[in-house]
Image 1 (tube, one colour):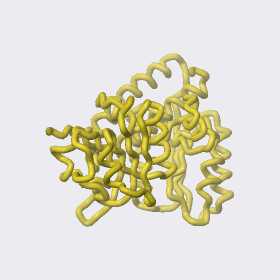
Image 2 (tube, one colour; image 1 turned 135 degrees about the vertical axis):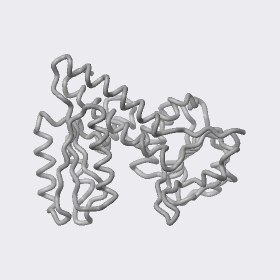
Image 3 (cartoon, one colour; image 1 turned 90 degrees about the vertical axis):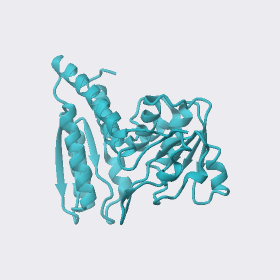
Length: 286
């Protein structure tokens, strides 16, 4: 069997082009430029890279952006005050606080302080609730949203298919399972306490792996003809690798996402999509 590589980088590029045209059209109608504010606490190199990539993506789409840098020892209250200021600023359409945060700051407090209509990460409990009930009003978390977007753009059917999600995190596993369910997939969630993991994975038409362990699964654990979506990004001596041993899946999987270049670029593309969605909601265009 020939395994088709799902190109997240190229797909993300197409999404940015679509969004750029949409933003330009909205501004031609007299509306102000959309704006995203990103708060970065501390000097973690990986976080700095992620923020730079998000700022670059904004420029490509036509979204104004700003990086607000805060020292690693900033007090929780000062950070929350900055979020409240952005909540009240009508020129800011999206607010994002780059994770992880220093241990003395409550991630939950930070997320829940962001105005839900500006929570373009989709982490606020109000947006999580919207996703759960499927009312379509909230913002979809960017990484699982990118997973679904890739499946749709590659015309990989979800309706009626056996879908297995390995990982139950609030950021990826849980929302990915809800999104697959919304597309009429039959969903199984696996985690560290799951018995017969290999047997369950071998039943999957669509296998989404987000466990955070390098090469956790290999080709012997997948079904022939499956679509394998590898969400993992693990730094090793050999460079960045996913949660799936891609090489061992070649010739057995029908589709597979590479690492890097698969789900990663889609995360930022879906963030841009959420920013435009937020902008339209705030200007009463939805």
